[in-house]
Length: 315
Image (cartoon, rainbow, N blue to C red; front, side):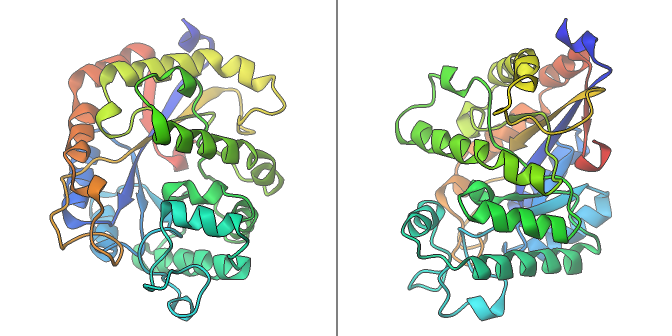
C-alpha cells in the first residue's frame, strides 16, 4: 500500500464559511466535536462572525481566515462606498462578477490590499490570534493579479499556509458537467498559475487538495475514497513535475486538505455577509455533507489507511 511508504498521512478537513450563519456554525461545531472536521475558515464579514469566533475559542477549534472579496459588504469602511470592489448596490460583485471585472481591468489592486489587510485585522480582533491559514472564498485568492497581492499580504502578516485548489483526477469525475465543470477548470488553471507566486513568498499548502469533486450532493463516501486514493497514488508523479501544484513541504509525510461546507441549512433572512443567505446555504446539501463527514464508515476508512486528522498548525 502507498500509505505504508511514508511516515504519516495528515488530513486537514476544513469547514468553510464559518460565521456565515448561526445554524451553519452549530453544524460545524457538531462536526468538530464528532471528529468529522479538524479546522475551520472564518468569514469575518459573515452574519455571525463574532459569535463563531467565540465558539472557536470555547471549543478550541483551529481557525483560519476565509478571505472574502466576492460576497457581501467590505470590512474596510473606506471601501463601502465608491470602490471598484463593489457593485452599484454597494456589495461585492459576486463569484462571477469579480472575475468579469478583473478581466476588464476594473479592479484597483490597492483596494484589494486594503480589504485583505482589514479582514486580517478584524480576524485578530475577533479571535485574539493570527490566522493559522488564509484562503479565498469562492477561490478568489488565486485569480490573476489578486494572487500577487494575496501572497504579499500573507507574507507581511506572517501567515504561512494557504490553499491551492488543484484536484488531481477532477476530469475523471463525470458527475460534474456543464458550467460547473467549466468553472472548476478555470479555478484549477488559475491555481496552477499561482504556484510560483506563493513559493516566491515562502507560503505553503498541503500536498493534496480535495473538494471540488465532493461538494454538496457530490460528497459521498465512495467519492471521497476515490479522490483520496487517486490523489495519493498520483503524488509521486506530481513531485517530479516542475509545473505541479505540490507544496515545498517535507517528504516525511503526505499532507492533504479536504474542503467541506457542512452545517444546518440557513433560514432567511438570517445569514450571509450582508445580503442574506444564498441558495446553496439554504439547501439540503450542507446537511448532506454533515452526515457524510460524520459517517462511521468514513472514519473507519481513515483508520484503515493510516490517515490522521489534524489542523494547519500541525503540518
